[in-house]
Every structure is written in structure tokens, then in C-alpha cells.
Image 1 (cartoon, rainbow, N blue to C red):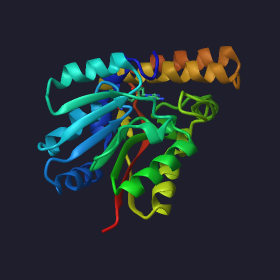
Image 2: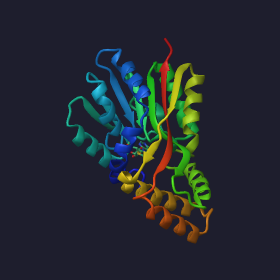
Image 3: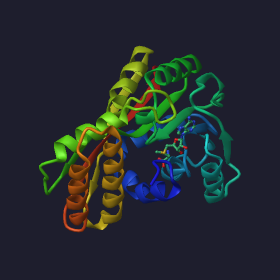
Image 4: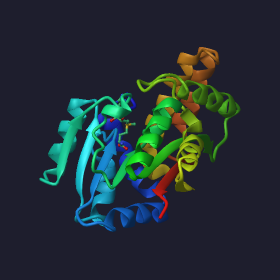
Length: 261
Ligand SMILES: C[S@@+](CC[C@H](N)C(=O)[O-])C[C@H]1O[C@@H](n2cnc3c(N)ncnc32)[C@H](O)[C@@H]1O
């Protein structure tokens, strides 16, 4: 399943919603609510997960959802069914051309581990110049732990993290380094930066998500050729066999960067 497939995004949305740090989510909403009729621009919106999570806390906001996938944008628009939500097709690699003008708050979720250092620097520079707040949730932080350990876990996670740093369409990806890079880039440009862990804690009730996640990991690890194919198969079979009984914790970081004053 592609990382951008709407089935995958639907599967992960409840876990993402439960994982988001509530204090940062509330603080992001407060920042938006401190002006009348704020505009919130969500980058790499997919089908609108951040809109659905944050919009109840910012009832007066209007939203611009940005993605380069017209099918996901159409799905986001259909599910929003709200005049206060517009969509914009744009390639986020071109930060200067990204339609951010007038935003009180720029948001994203599960996006910045795909982004490059250059993109983060350009975005931080632009948002500093425009005095715009920034809330990026759920950047994968490189940690994955299971209640039932397997001898290949460490090697698999290391290979997966290597794969996470490959180009996913936004330049050489920051992967597990995204959270730290965002905090540094926005901090250096004068923002007040807060970060908080937002791990998925998955159990047997999340067996489908656990299975899809380890299948995605195995596929990524195979592409690195860091492990023997039989070892990847062995690991995946063991992991799939325990999704209905075991638990896992997949680490993420949320970042909130607000202009000072
Ligand atoms: C992992 S998904 C996250 C989607 C959504 N934010 C969520 O949390 O469900 C990453 C999103 O970034 C979008 N994306 C990836 N590369 C992009 C690019 N170069 N320009 C615009 N959007 C891009 C994908 O289409 C996808 O919707």
C-alpha cells in the first residue's frame, strides 16, 4: 500500500488522532482563534485528516487544503462538504509558489519526514517573513518497539530508517530527523518552538494498522537490500502472526512554532 493511498490514510487516521499531543493541538487552535476568521493552510492534506481533527477547535476558521494529488484533494473536498474549505493543487517542493498567503496558521501531518532540509529551511524562512504560525504533527521519529520482540527487529528498523531518508518526491527526505530539523529551522528564525512526542500505541484492536505498517516496513526494507530477502520474510511472518495478540509503539513528534510576541 502506498504511503499516500487513501486506504492507508483512512487506516491510520484514528491512531493519528489518538496520538497527537493534546497540549500542542490546543495551543495551535488558540493561536488560530486569536484572530477573527483565521485562514488555516494544511500542507500535504491527503483526504483532510488534520482538518477533521482541528476544525472542531477552530469553528470560525476557513481552510485551504494543499496537495499535489488531485484524487486525494477531491476526496478531501467531498468529505468536508463545507464552503469554508477550499482545495489547491500544488507541488510543495516550490515553497515560494505554495499558496500560503494570508494564513494565520500552516499545518501538516505525517508529512515532514518526507520533506528535505532545503524545503524546511525555505518554509521556515517564508513563515518567519509572513509572521505565520506552524503546527506539524506526527513526523515519524525513527523508533518502533514491539511487546513481543524478534531477533531481527533492530536490523529491520535500522534498514527502514535508512529507507526513510530516500527521496519520496520532496527531495532527500529527513526521515527520522524531521522533528529535530523543524525545531532547529524554526527556532533559528525566531519562533517559539514546542515539541512533544505523539507515539502510536497499537494493540490487538489495531491489528489491521499493525499489519499494514509492518508490511510497509518489510517492503521498504527489501528495497534497501540491507537484509537477506529470507530474513525479511521471516521477520514479516512473525510480525503478522502477532498483530492480534501483541502491542507496538511507533514514535512520532509534533511541533508547534509560533511567532514571538
Ligand atoms: C503520508 S500522506 C499524509 C496525508 C495527511 N496529511 C494525513 O495525515 O492523512 C503525505 C501527503 O503528502 C502529499 N505529498 C507528497 N509529496 C507532495 C508534493 N511534492 N507536493 C504536494 N503534496 C505532496 C501526498 O499526496 C499525501 O497526501
